Image (tube, rainbow, N blue to C red; front, side, top):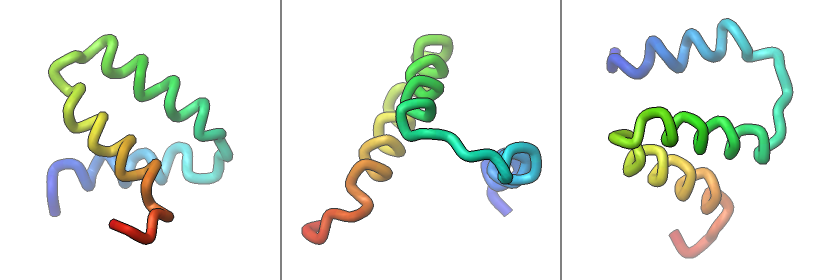
Length: 58
Protein backbone atom coordinates (compact mmCIF):
# COMPACT_ATOMS: atom_id res chain seq x y z
CA UNK A 1 0.00 0.00 0.00
CA UNK A 2 1.26 3.43 -0.90
CA UNK A 3 1.23 6.12 1.77
CA UNK A 4 -1.27 8.09 -0.33
CA UNK A 5 -3.68 5.16 -0.30
CA UNK A 6 -4.47 5.89 3.34
CA UNK A 7 -5.47 9.45 2.51
CA UNK A 8 -7.57 8.30 -0.43
CA UNK A 9 -9.26 5.69 1.74
CA UNK A 10 -9.94 8.27 4.45
CA UNK A 11 -11.46 10.60 1.87
CA UNK A 12 -13.72 7.84 0.58
CA UNK A 13 -14.71 6.78 4.10
CA UNK A 14 -15.42 10.29 5.40
CA UNK A 15 -16.88 12.00 2.33
CA UNK A 16 -17.63 9.24 -0.15
CA UNK A 17 -21.37 9.73 0.01
CA UNK A 18 -21.18 13.46 -0.79
CA UNK A 19 -21.64 14.98 -4.21
CA UNK A 20 -19.51 17.97 -5.16
CA UNK A 21 -19.04 19.95 -8.33
CA UNK A 22 -15.80 20.08 -10.24
CA UNK A 23 -15.76 23.81 -9.56
CA UNK A 24 -15.80 23.07 -5.82
CA UNK A 25 -12.95 20.58 -6.27
CA UNK A 26 -10.95 23.05 -8.36
CA UNK A 27 -11.38 25.68 -5.65
CA UNK A 28 -10.23 23.28 -2.93
CA UNK A 29 -7.18 22.26 -5.01
CA UNK A 30 -6.28 25.91 -5.58
CA UNK A 31 -6.72 26.63 -1.87
CA UNK A 32 -4.44 23.69 -1.06
CA UNK A 33 -1.73 24.91 -3.46
CA UNK A 34 -2.00 28.43 -2.03
CA UNK A 35 -1.34 27.00 1.44
CA UNK A 36 1.24 24.44 0.23
CA UNK A 37 3.05 25.81 -2.83
CA UNK A 38 5.56 22.95 -2.76
CA UNK A 39 2.74 20.68 -4.02
CA UNK A 40 1.95 22.82 -7.08
CA UNK A 41 3.40 20.35 -9.60
CA UNK A 42 1.60 17.20 -8.39
CA UNK A 43 -1.69 19.08 -8.02
CA UNK A 44 -1.25 20.50 -11.53
CA UNK A 45 -0.62 16.99 -12.87
CA UNK A 46 -3.69 15.61 -11.09
CA UNK A 47 -5.90 18.44 -12.32
CA UNK A 48 -4.63 18.04 -15.90
CA UNK A 49 -5.14 14.27 -15.75
CA UNK A 50 -8.70 14.70 -14.47
CA UNK A 51 -9.46 17.35 -17.10
CA UNK A 52 -8.27 15.10 -19.93
CA UNK A 53 -9.75 11.75 -18.87
CA UNK A 54 -12.11 11.65 -21.84
CA UNK A 55 -9.55 12.77 -24.44
CA UNK A 56 -9.09 9.98 -26.95
CA UNK A 57 -5.67 11.23 -28.05
CA UNK A 58 -4.00 10.39 -24.77
